[in-house]
Image (tube, rainbow, N blue to C red; front, side):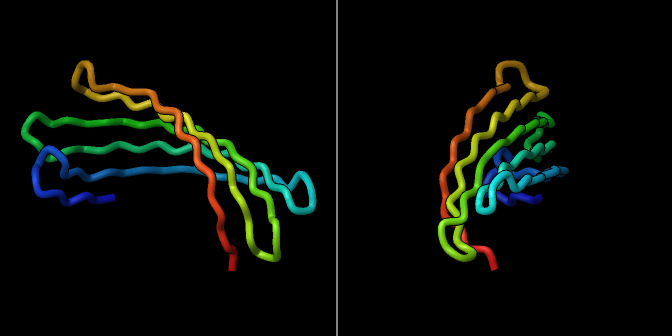
Length: 100
């Protein structure tokens, strides 16, 4: 992952690894679980680095052939090498997707 911004404070290089899995619990319903690990190294002079761990869970329901509605929750824990800049986030998402 590479983000080139207009200022060094927002330009970073990131490396991530993740795993996602799904389990078909009913003929048209899938439970989803995932984990992602991300490290971002910012180019600003202080050497700012952020490490994020994200745990996700969701459900996907097929409502028409190859059309799905998804509901997901993710909890992201971010730590950095600068005091006072760590965070915990709760992320809720709802979407419609087409699978081809």
